[in-house]
Amino acid sequence: MHAGIEIPDEPLCPGNELDEHARHKDVCEWLLQRLIGDLTEQLNALPARKPRFNVELHLRSKLEHAVVQTRLQDLLVKKSASAQV
Image (tube, rainbow, N blue to C red; front, top):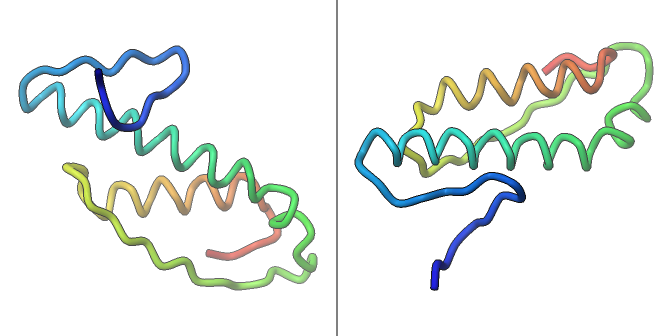
């Protein structure tokens, strides 16, 4: 039996280091999409005068921190056009 995160409609099969990196990328993207998707209503409720907020990212992954940070910023800006991240 496999223990861990399961992404609907996305099989995550064991493999080599390259496969592991791809799995980390898929899981990270899925988690970020869900997190930001769940926060969309709250983000859009922020005042229209360009609120500024900081997000602290803690990551344990085979992905580079800067890559995930940039993706998170992109998603936040996309979901909340009035906010500066």
